[in-house]
Image (spheres, each protein chain N blue to C red):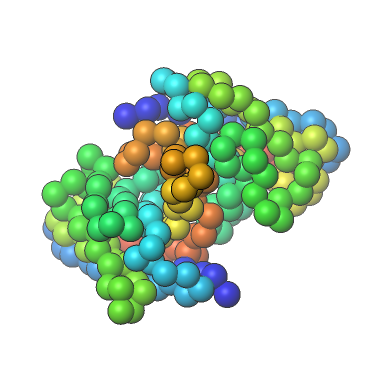
Length: 108
Length: 127
């Protein structure tokens, strides 16, 4: 199975900061990578698919990039509602669609 | 409205069984790839099982042989039958739609992520 390693696992940031989260795959996943946001007690929400395509309704301050084994999720200007945990997921190697370990973004 | 609603979670003793349901509205379960994903308390997301539109089923190694995924097309509902439950199966279980589709123009499958999620149902395995 493909392993996904997210870094950092935790970050503390302020409103207005630019935040970058990295996801590294143990083998190439082409551009079949998605990012999710999860708030406490809620289901995950799809933010980005195909590494860089924004899901409908997701604010443009979110962006994704990368291909192969290294990917990034960037929030250009952190807003109060963005404090959450973020997960990457590979969708290249079916059927086992692994998730990264998560990155918790907290208020500094 | 497009949505998924899970039910069936609860407290069960080790070795016991439970069946989770995932009722869909606004789209057809049998035309979609549908997965179960779980999240143990304080932990990350773990993919558990999938049923493809053509009916093939697959499982994570941790549940293979104990869990069975199925669907009832007449009820537009997916199920997860969980047998021989263990303490480590304790988690919130989510059902999710995989938005994979076949692009006729490119002759490729597009894997666009899990776009619809249920609210989750808690399963606790404890004596």
